[in-house]
Image 1 (tube, helix red, strand yellow):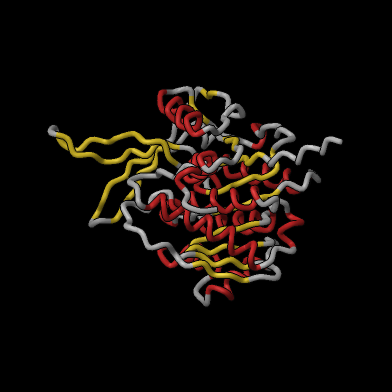
Image 2 (tube, rainbow, N blue to C red):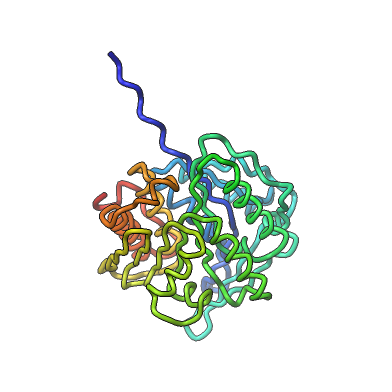
Length: 321
C-alpha cells in the first residue's frame, strides 16, 4: 500500500520594497555610483530563495533597466516575480554616501513603480502561498503603505490561516509623520503572527525600557512571537510559553548590510522546514523549537556579514541545520 505524499511546504510571499542602491565607488575620474539591487524585503526574498524556501515576490517593478536588474537578481536566486507586471514608471534609487563613516541615504522615490502601488493593485494570491512577509520603507509612504496594509488585512481576514511576519526595519530619517507611521505599524503588528524588531526599532516604537518588558508590550498587541535582534550579541525570542536567547556568532564582519533581512529569511526557513509556519503551531511553540529557529537565523545572518553588500548564504553554505 502506497503512503500518501507529505503536504507540500508553503510558498513564502515577500511583499515590499525593491530598489537600486547607488553605492559610491572611487574611479580615476572621481566618485561614481555602482547600481546594486537592494531593499529590505527584496533582500529577504533573495535570502529565503537561496536558503531553499519556495519564494515569491510582490512589489511594483519598473520596466526600466533597473527593474530588469531587480528581476534578474530574483531569477538568479530562484525567487518568482511573476506577480509583478512591468510598470511604466521609474525604479526607486537610493544614493548612499558616507559622512564621517556613517551611511547617509538620498532616496529618489517620487512617482516610482513601487511608491504608486494602491490597494487596487493587490494580487490574487495563489493557493500555495502560506506565509507572507512585510516590512521596510514600503510601509511608510503613500499610497504604497496603504496597499501593503490592505494586503495584510485581507490576508488576516480571509480564513486561510496564512502566517504573517512583519519587520518594520524602521529608518527614522525616512519618516515624515511619526504619529501616522506608528499608528500604521501598530495596526500591522496586531495583524501579524511574528514580529521581528532590532533593539533600536523596539525602543523607537515603545520608548526606553528593559527589552523583555518592551517586547511583551508588543506581543500583547496580538503577535504569537516577538523576535528582537541585538547585532553581534545575537537575538531573543518571546512567545506565549517560551522565552529564549541565542548568542551571536564569532565572525569577522565585512559589512552588516542585509544582515537583518537574512535573519528574517533564516527564521522563516526554519519554521517552514519544521512544519511550524502556521499560526496555530506558534501558539504552542516550545523553547527548543524557538531556540532552533533563532539559532538558524543567527547563523545565516552571521554568514551574510562576512561579505560586502547584501549577499546572503546559499543553503549549502550553512554549516548546520
